[in-house]
Image 1 (cartoon, one colour):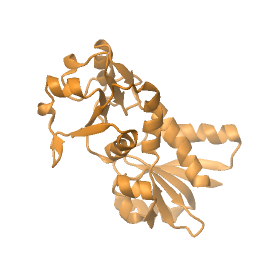
Image 2: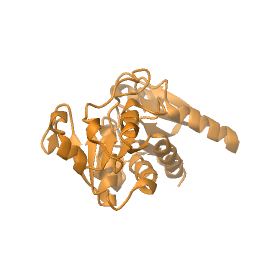
Image 3: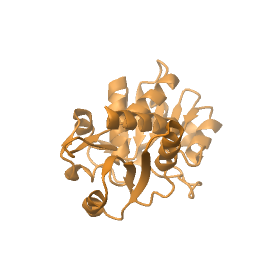
Image 4: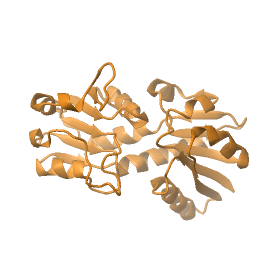
Length: 242
């Protein structure tokens, strides 16, 4: 039995376990997918020692914290600075990859128009780094927005009408609005959105977040994170088996 799993914290809700379990059942594969739900990244060595793991996905809050525990990084993951896929090679070395950027980019492409030149990335965690990399590859300029902005980042208070109107793509990389706290949403001026905007929420539960509802009310195109998750999961399987 080949063991795969998801490394994270408080991940009982996770998409990955259900997705891969169904995939393994459909393919009649001798594989099992588990949740490695640990309160601290320092417990990772004991998880690895307990069983023979073939590959892992990594989610909040360990996409950056896992890096010191890996033997090497794929060049793209190294550039992004965040890992959501870990491959165990034939020498049992741990290699970090990032498939989030691929899932985001490929799910966004069908929605893009020539008018989408600039983006706002809401949040600065591990997922946001993959989003920034994908936007670089797509030739879309971006601005980070944070509650506690560092250098080259801005605060939510700085998002005036001109900023909203000039950034046609807005990506929510924060957990605001995730079930069960579905009434929450990033504090932006939604009344300045137009039909030319795309609101992309990395959240997939609920299917339509408050962030997305506000966008729809203004005529904006909205998308949740489900297709991104499916695409990054399939890329994970490809990485583990290449």
